[in-house]
Image (cartoon, rainbow, N blue to C red; front, side, top):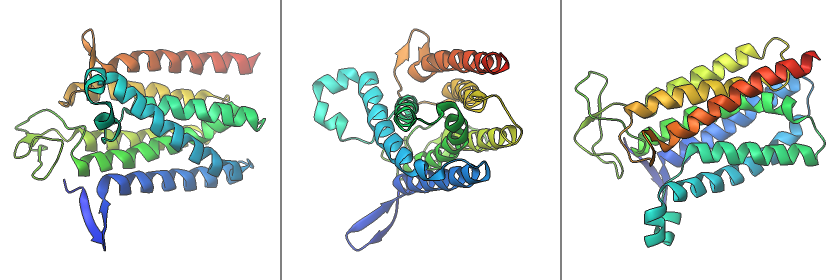
Length: 249
């Protein structure tokens, strides 16, 4: 709605950036608290978070450039300096960075994968509030009472009632974070909590995509994110059941 929240001297605090920062810090604090409760090494979460944020940022931008490849060919510098990102790229890059990090540290990846994924969902929930403040990732036009009208957005069409897909996504991610935290309270097979995140997120993202109206690329009859969701869901289901079987042997 209002991305420029307030100014401190020459610096302007943007809602999108502020929500991203709050999300990362909240995710880190929750992950640290849960790690200590489980007797895990909480200190590794700080360098791991930094690494995942950097690689997640780069991979989210990379996937955005791939989706917008025609514009990237025309104006590469303009696209690289824009605010465009694709969340799935960030997830893939972040998980890959974490996998490498824990392998180097010789720690059990699956154990920490289960630890951090509820925190990832929390970070995404706050990030979607940032999307709402900026007006990006906007929904289709609607006459419904839930419609939101932007007046100062650089992304969403102004003066038109739109489905608040950002807030719907945010609520969904808070719900997923809660489900994962509750699920993880009991002893679970290593890797199944993280796998459950992949399952729930991919399903939610697939259906929210039907409500969005910003250009996100397409693959056949699906948006790019819906297409990736199908593979993410398959990967999550495979991981969930394979990890359960492997632990039982």
